[in-house]
Structure formats: structure tokens, C-alpha cells
Image 1 (spheres, rainbow, N blue to C red):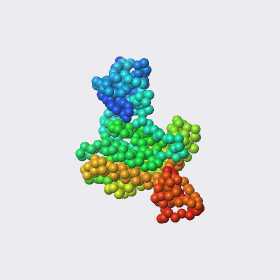
Image 2 (tube, helix red, strand yellow):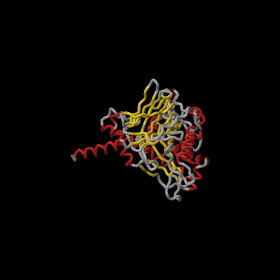
Image 3 (cartoon, one colour):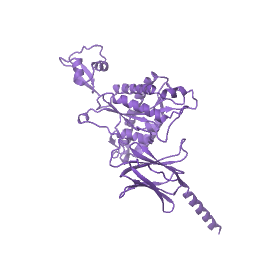
Image 4 (cartoon, rainbow, N blue to C red):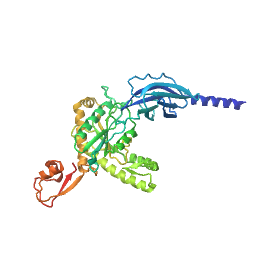
Length: 430
């Protein structure tokens, strides 16, 4: 008899725990050029997302979940969604149905509970299936004549965004806004430099996962990834900017992750690891990471030296940490902490367009210094060699290669315009 009671109690306990998850709120907002649905849940649950046609619908199934909040009313101006409704499935699963205005491409991911949110969130992003989403996949346009000589591409990542505001200053300044301002200014400067172009991982107030930011840089075929942040500390006297690269431990963990996935079509610098044996894949990973680490450290040092001319730096040398966004094994990556937003004077400066511009210009000078010394092969900045012939002058060379005489002098260390037949002159691609 007692065994029956024990079984009954265990069964009841099991049912209670199985039904423990609840949907406490569903929020609808913007995500780039698409729409984002955020499900605030009491616990992490298994979910399934799929679309149906005739009419177009998006279905989100949440296992062992009950609805505890009213569903949001969607504005008529929303370009993708007509209405949101729900129902119970199999007696214990929750089905949320989104009636659509057009066919969409859905993408979902979970955000675990953290310091800002003590509950997990399921995020579902949807984009018009018939429209390329420029914010989601940066597209680098190239003319036919640019194939052999391309621009240097720099991915700029404004940290945080959306429901992740980042650090907050004493005056209420939110990190996500000021770093986006600096990122936009940096993009404008880079786009104005011949032979360079920039892409933003986010260009609005919406959340991106850390690996999603890395993926955007990879999709843009970036030569450099710059993540921009604003630090905070409990002691408001602490101040100064910092520059980080990936730590050795962080690089090792990412190498292990990539090698574990190398049979699933992973690419390293445009080379597929899928058809390589594990030994060769490991060698390729080591070579790629060594080159990337060296380039990351060089550009970080250049940027740090440039930042020292703008104001105080928190540390005299480049720092290393295991930040996820720095883990691309084949894209040199740095993270810049522009200031301590928790410091009143730095918070005030960081709010002003003038200081934001100074920070963007300082970062750019460091980046430009790196690429002048080490331009990626195949880019307009990659050096060519011209052998001086009779009748050649620096002004003729400048006209021929579409650069200035001053640039030719600077690159070749010339103190005058005097050149001789047979002399080799380095010419940057232009």
C-alpha cells in the first residue's frame, strides 16, 4: 500500500514540476529592418519555431508552459504582423500563433538569466522573406574592376543594445547609446578614407547575441573587428580608456570549439575545414590564430597610443581577456573601452558629440597606422613596386597611381623629389 502512495506522490511532484514554466510577458519590438518577439519565461523550456502558409503564420510551440499574461496588441503600422493569439496544445504545451502580413524568415535564440534579468528570455526575430535585410547581413558591394583590388573592410560593433543597456552613469547615461554614437562616427570617418569601408553590426537600439556579432563580421568578410564599449566600476574615481585583445586561454577554448565542429562545414579564412583531417585542421587553426593574434596586438597597440593623445588611459599597456566577441580565429579583433561611464567627468565628456568625435578619430588613427604598415593582400592599400624608368617623376607617378606625391615620399622615406633610373619605389594600391 505504501508503495502506491509513494508512486502517487512522485507522480504528482513530476506533474507539478513539468508544468512549472510560464510565459509571463510577450513583447513585440523592432530588430533592424525586421520585428523581434521577446518571450519572458519563468524557466528555460524546449521550443519549436516554424512557419505555415495559406495564410502566412508563424508558430512558436513552448513545451510544458502555461500563459500567465495577456498577449500584446500589435500596431497596424507593423510591416509584418497582423495579430498574436495562443492556445493549449497536448494539454500542457503552449502554442503562440502570429498571423502575418507576408511570408517571413524566423530566427530564434535563448538569453539566459543574468545580472540585468533574473529570468530567461526566448527571442524570435522575423524578417520579410522577400526582402534582403541589410541590417542583418551587411553586403559589401563591389564593382567588376574592384575584384582584384578591394577595400579594407572594418566591422564596428557597438556593444549592448535593446533590452541590454550595458553600464549606466550617475546621470543616467546608458552605455548602449553613447557607444553607438561613437561607432557611427567611426564608420563615417572610415568610409571617407580612400580604400576603406566600414559596416556596423548594429545601427539601432536592438539586441544582438555575441556570436551573432562575430557572424556579421564574417559575413562582411571583415579585415578587422572593433567592439566599442564604456566601462564602469563601483569606485567613481576610476577613469581612463582601455584596449583589449583576446587572452591565450580564450583563444585556446575557441580553437577547441572550432575543431570540434570542423566536420560541419566550418570555414577558416575562407578555407573549409570540412574535408580536412583533424591533424591538418589543427595545424591550419594554429597558423590562423597566430597570425590573427599578432595582427590584433599590433592594431591594439596603435589604437592605445592614439588614445593616450586624447586623454588618460586606464592601463599603460594593451589588456587581454576572454571576451566572446574577440574570439574569431581568422579576424583580428580588438575591444575598446572608451571611458569609465561611472566616472562623473568622463560620463559628461562621453555625452558630448565633440568628445565622441575625438574618440572615433583616435581609434581611426590607430587603425590607419596598422593598415599602412600591414595592408591585407589584394586590397587597394597593398603595396606594389614600381621600377623608375627614364622620364619618370614623382608627380607623374602620383598621377598614374592616383595618390599624392606626399604619400609616395612618406611611404618610401624620401626627403626630396629626386629619383634615379632603376630605383624601386613602393606604391600603395589606390
